[in-house]
Length: 159
Image (cartoon, rainbow, N blue to C red; front, side, top):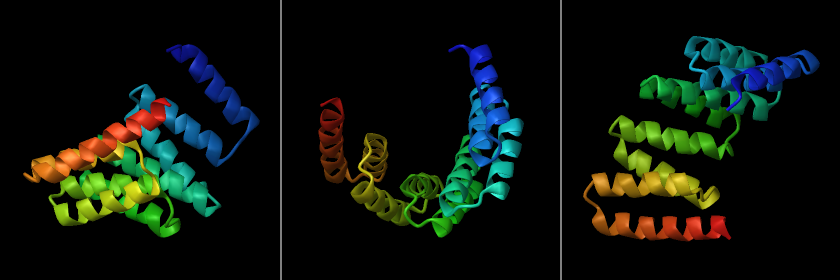
């Protein structure tokens, strides 16, 4: 909640540690402060400067999230796909891809992507989103089953 301290800490981090990690943190800071264009430019720089597949995939994922927040599901999908081509095991990008596919009414592909990501990264948010997708398609039984899985995931995370 202390924006001034967060900004100072991020600037100090950038001075001490140049490169992709500092750029990524700075992009997140800008995003959190509502400075979307600065966040986008910094995230693009991080993607351009990334050396390892993990850094590149994370930077591309961040670009996908920024596109999603701007209401651009096609661009988000392109960035998530690029992240997955860079690192096929970048499961958060698979979840982002599922979300973008659902927004583009490519529901069969979205269902498959959500089901795949949940086998690899069983996160409550993804379980909720899949349940909501089932419900929106009138697949009430599948939605109820998915919500039951969500409850199990939440119980495990509380434990």
